[in-house]
Amino acid sequence: MRWIKRLLLVITTVFFATTITFLLIRMMPGDPVENMAISMVHDQGIDYESAYRSAKAMLNYDPDVPILTQYTKYLSGLMKGNLGQSLIYKRDVKQIIGEALPWTLFVLSISLLLSFFIGIFLGMYIAWKRTTILDPILSAYTAIVGSIPEFVIAFLLIVFFSVKLKWFPSRGAYSSSVKPGFNMPYFLDVLNHAVLPITAYVLGGIGRWALNMKANAVSVLGEDYIVSARARGLREKRIITRYVGRNAMLPLVTNLAISFGMIFGGSPLIERLFVYPGVGYYMSQSISSRDYILMQGIFLMITVTVVLANVVAEILYSILDPRIRMEG
Image (cartoon, rainbow, N blue to C red):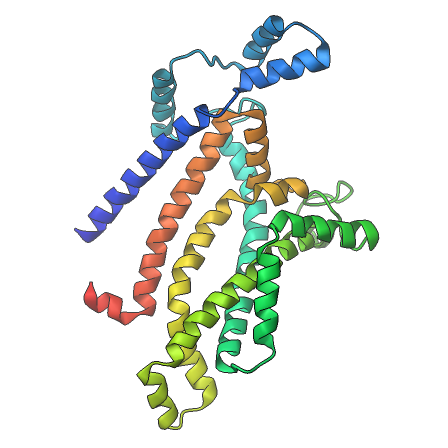
């Protein structure tokens, strides 16, 4: 019965989130036909009325269709597993997402795991060794980096490592001179192109995870079972890993799972800056061109993954903390 309620809650959440997203997208100023018509007026020098008619024919989209009719058609397509065809790219949205998603997951999953594990180990170490010089350094680093958007960090990395030192490429997922496939030159080239995006994400995420872990670990260190473990003469390594680390990390499990759900949407600013063909890149392109169909598909995917990530987080939390299972 509990799982049925959870499933119904998931379906209801996705439905309402999808509906709200559908309405909000169409409330954005401008529409794809108007955007293309204005662009044609500037580029081709034709009058607006002719450009508008041409844009409507080229996009095969009529913004004058009642929104209820559009919504009904959208839901009907979803029931059949059809996300529609992109207005700009003239390709199925499922195909675009299917090609872009592996690139986003490749970069962001590595970045998230690196920043998470480095952060929690740093936070746990600083909490245990309270007088270490790493504490003020980490606080200063987080304050500085936390106030700088990740795309600014990415831009600085491009300027320094791509433009000045020429160590890493600044755009794309691989070089045009490399043949894609299961071969070592291709794999190495993909890794070379991914270094700077991954570094930008990791530099921005380490401090947040470390500070959260430090705060949780400090509170755990004051618990009675830690004092008892020390009184029994247990080794420090065992206390910090099995007692402090495991319990302090529990609140971060939910954040990690939700973060995994969010990575499916990519990072529009960073992926666009690196011209990296991930979901975030296509999201930024769809927003700038008002490609409603592509936007809907990407936001639906993000909604579903975030909702499922919350469910996974709850399951993991109950596995890591037996008290949750006993209470349930």
